[in-house]
Amino acid sequence: MTRVLVTGSAGFIGHALSRRLLGDGHAVTGFDAFSDYYDVGLKRARHAELAASPSFEAVEARLETPGALLDTVARTRPEIVVHLAAQAGVRYSIENPRSYVESNLVGTANLLEAVRAHPVRHLLLASTSSAYGGDTQSPSRETDRAVTPVSFYAATKLATEAMAHSYAHLFEVPTTALRFFTVYGPWGRPDMALFLFTKKILAREPIEVFSGGSATRDFTYIDDLVEALVRVMDRIPAQPGAGAPVCAADTLSPVAPYRLVNVGGGRPVRLDRMIEILEAALGRTAQRISLPLPPGDVSATRASTELLQALVGTVPETPIEVGLPAFVRWYRDFYGV
Image 1 (cartoon, one colour):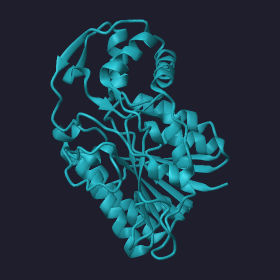
Image 2 (cartoon, helix red, strand yellow):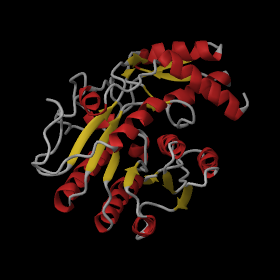
Image 3 (cartoon, rainbow, N blue to C red):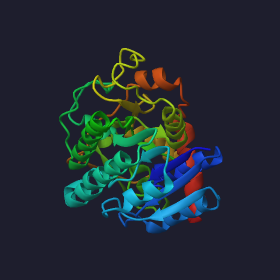
Image 4 (cartoon, rainbow, N blue to C red):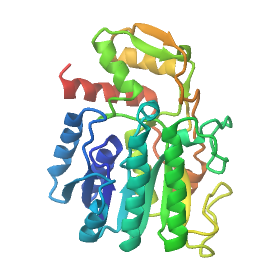
């Protein structure tokens, strides 16, 4: 049994990872603030499912509250920390940037101080494909110079990567930062396109389609992402000079036990194709309103998975033709529609 602290455990990815870890026999401390950015009832339902396990402990607190993370880490002494808690959303970062400063920057700084005071075997830090921003190279590689974020959300995530690298260097905190690409599936986030489209199509309301549906996303099914995370936990970055790169694409830092890894399917899908599959799964045709791409959004994402595969082997790649219907089945069952 490994002791794992998961921040953001009531979130979409945190819930799925915690459920997998509990199923594998590990002890999980789930840290979450239950913010009202989206439906708190959904978050409570996720945590209620986790609480059925005697190996799960819930801590309800905010990342930015002084001492909250430090006290939790000191008391539970996790061997692995997976930092998933953050203020998410590209467009909301234009409306309320301060919440991103507090959760993503101050909150991550508090976590880094906690693991500095109470060292862990491995820190995993969630980042985002949005970090690639204005980089037009496809697929996006971890070695690309991602210094052109086009949203404040992406800027804060790039900052957390840099902050974590500095702590890995200064205090020898073994850290892997992971850039997630459009994660979807059962228990998903209500602010994301798939959830919004499903809700509106079932209510016979029009959906807003940006760029005529030509935008592409590298959709990553939640179970595939969790499988990658579980495997990466055991792939701890070596101290400088103590390990060789695993492949030419490795991002192992020359001055710190730190690595940056993409987690995505590597098979982008056009938005209009996603809508077609969703319509088939719902048995209804969507009414579409065409709009231009909003500020902060990018037109395409596609992950290079060379480094991920070199680290952990081939991970499952659930096709969207399978993943979308699975989400629809969960949605209908959860909401009774």
